[in-house]
Image (tube, rainbow, N blue to C red; front, side, top):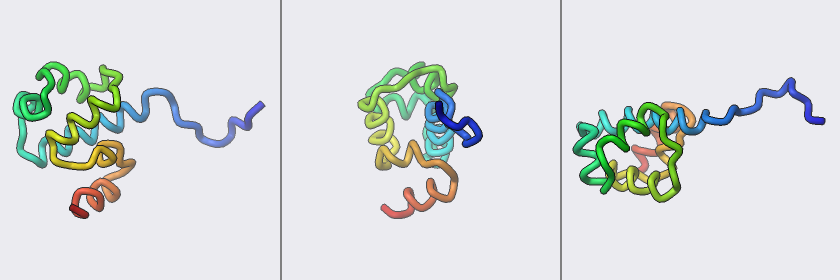
Amino acid sequence: MRNRSVSEPQVGQTRALLASNLVVLRRQAGLSQEALALVAGVHRTFVAHVERGARNLSIDSVEKLAIGLRVPPVVLLAPDMETLKSLTSAE
């Protein structure tokens, strides 16, 4: 049996992190949900669902969104704003 005193990530935390990062990056890029959807090759409602954390994404979908934002896919999974800033400024 594992020791439960260590904080374990909960299912859905990564999806919530990606959703939050997507909103921040999309706004920084000056894109609407519709504009991001167009350049990423996905439907606008898909972007809205992802930003609400209502969609379970495939790796391919993460990659499409990253390409639309012109960032490496790993940026969408940055755990905090400092990491997010360092990954986006490294380009």
